[in-house]
Amino acid sequence: MLREHLRNGLVIVTALGASLSPITAKAEEQVWRHAVSVLETPKLPPDFQNLPYVNLQAPKKGELRLSEEGTFDSFNPLVDKGNPAAGVGLIFDTLMKSSEDEVSVSYGLLAEAISYPEDMSSVSFRLRPEAKWADGQPVTPEDVVFSFNSAKANSTQLANYYRHVTSAEKTGEREVTFKFDEKNNKELPAIVGDFPILPKHWYEGKDAKGSQRDISKSGLEPPLGSGPYKIASFQAGSTLRYELRDDYWGKDLPINRGQNNFKVISYTYFTDKDVEFEAFRSGSVDYAQENSASRWATRYDFAAVKEGRVIREALSNPFKATGIMQAMVPNMRRDQFKDSRVREALNYALDFETLNRDLAYGGLKRVDSFFWGTELASSGLPQGRELEILQGLKDKVPSRVFTTPYTNPVGGDATKVRDNLKTAIGLLKEAGWDLKGNQMVNAKTGKPLSFEILVNSPSFERTISPYIASMKKIGIDARLRVVDASQYINRIRTFDFDMIWVVWAQTMNPGNEQATYWGSAAASQNGSKNYAGIADPAVDELVRMVTSAPTREEQVAAIHALDRVLLANNFVVPLFYSGEAKIAYWNTITHPERLPTYGIGFPTIWWAK
Image: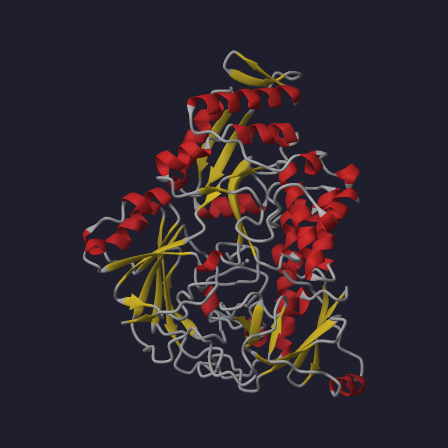
């Protein structure tokens, strides 16, 4: 996921007022469930004792030392402001908690049961009576309503994600109900249980200085939570220490048994990826998830690895149900990127095969779908129901979706690279650009084709620099710009960039998030994930079909069609992925022998030796 994979909206509404007697009468007819699922029947029964992949004998001890690149200045998870602290989710519980052994299945956490009518026009959660905040006060329906309304008011991403949720209201002493503006959307009852619940009474109170707290703002006052950990100490932007709460109300719940095993989880922030790696190699950091194929191939040969004190694993588990699109994303809000032929030319300028050979030692694969690696990826030519869907949009989609399967250009040797660059020059010429001398210029204005590639870490340079050099051969003036984490986040939120490097992670049940990725409305909403600035009627219609599909078969057909149209429009320059989580860790920590089917359970089910 967000599986997106937070690596990540709410509406505002409160409508109390109707008498409770009709609601109570209706409640007597409700069917309460212990779990919610979108794609499959939950595997665990109502009386399950623990998730099947945990170690119930795991000790509760030790410190897990982790690292992050960048900085942080906020503990508020429900606003699109500031740089949220790593691990802040450890403080807050959600209504439901997912199982990494199942696809889109969640079991009750703060909620002991969930209920929804046959037409799925609403969903109700019944809170556990034992659920408590760290100050001993109970978690209430008012907390849920407050959190939902606040999130939808203060986060563009969450507002888009929950745009079909029209209200949240208290419908019983321990019951809260969310209402939807559409019916038969299987995803809505499931995703409403995902967002963190924050304490209404704490945010409506005053801080230690007597100032009124404001949930719409970011800040570094350690918040009151209901989750397993609390913030013990921190140094703004630098270090952060969480401690396991001995009085955590939910530590013995079946959904939590065998989990939250580290007494302390600490984070140290670094501004340079190489320095961060050296901290791991020296033993100052316990765990590293490596995203550089070249570093994985060449720099994990130090003594601790050879002696078995550092363990390396390449695991496919997290990607078994995750579709990936990693890409360079031109911002179509900029004039130079509005023409699809320009964007396609940029793809022809990327020599993936040489990059893969020289920098990644052949360890990467080229991405050719927005749902790469899953059954949701389109392939070949459209057929059956997918073809019918596309024919209904025939005048709104590129004709190539019916005639030409999508493929990325192939380089790797001098002849292929030269031919690709010639193709790129031809596409640019069709789009109104001419190569004059060593500069690509607009035929009408004489303005050069020039742009900046914005990143937040020098670690991108090894990959981007050869791409820039390739574009320079055809007169394109591309430049790399590295900025600090705070500036990067602010510029991304306001779409103040020419081109960026993006990874979208898709679940096996794409839904409401598709509108914030590709929808026209999101293109003008600061904070959305429509980084490319896509505003396309056919894409909007396909997103609607994906989210409202009455059957799985119809949904998959619509997803295939959406994928095909996104690719045919050249909205991005697809990059690459390995399809594995490359992890390394010191032998002072460990995990169960059998990891969950669709994840690695880190750090929740791991423990200190």
